[in-house]
Length: 313
Ligand code: NAD
Ligand code: UDP
Image (cartoon, rainbow, N blue to C red; front, side, top):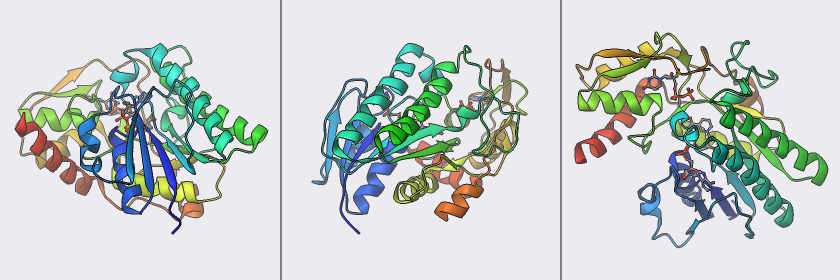
């Protein structure tokens, strides 16, 4: 293996911290850049003593120059409650932040992996979602700051590739979960686990029959590494094709935590996608990648992590 200098933007976040850890294990030098909007120092506290690890506090909306071989560009809030808190900032992070990363990559001839999202498919009219589907996104709804921001990030990436020959990789990430998600992250897996552990009501948005596909973080990180190393220039779906309703998810988490929490219905957020499941044929064929960790096993590991943290508060 060749040792590389790798920049991870958003490296102190949920996915970024797992990725930094894995890259260090593989023997690379890692620069973790974060403005700590939703990231936490404690996510990477165990890496700070490693001489191959460097932490840079920086907002990606400001330009930067760093000598690196590769960039995993993850900086952006991912949970609806966080990305909707300051929608203008979310769009700026997606657009200006991605422009800055691509300019850096162009200057130092680094390869860039863009963390895109299944949200580019919006509330999809095709099911499951293939990369060839252009999506069904409300451009003016409350999710638009994120969905359209990420669509623009993809457009920027392919434009830099076409116009300047920058090596870009586009990962369309489907819902991913695992240890280190924030307790107040607002995403469904962390909400349900925390509610069950605290004996609070489980908040089901709408009738709970909407579906999502949940990928365990270690599987996703493996997908990132394979995509970055591959010659694939087209977007690639990374996710677990298992599809569950939110009611099924609540039941699984309730059982795993031995919780007596009751379900309570809350209004369905505007433009909440009804169904979501990745078609991962491209990842299987071109990256020889598919997730290995089933939802029950992944939830067990995630619950164990939350049990340590929630009981410590
Ligand atoms: P996260 O919120 O835990 O991590 C995002 C990180 O980016 C945080 O550490 C945050 O502080 C940092 N950040 C935000 N704005 C920044 C800015 N302007 N400058 C520098 N740092 C900034 O979320 P995550 O789940 O780890 O998601 C990481 C990436 O993956 C995001 O780009 C997200 O859109 C994408 N993604 C995640 C999922 C998922 O299910 N986890 C699904 C689809 C896409
Ligand atoms: N959801 C829910 N209860 C919660 C949080 C979320 O029922 O406490 C639902 C939400 O409406 C959505 C699904 O769970 O249908 C996944 O939500 P999340 O915010 O995790 O991800 P996204 O909507 O971005 O896929």
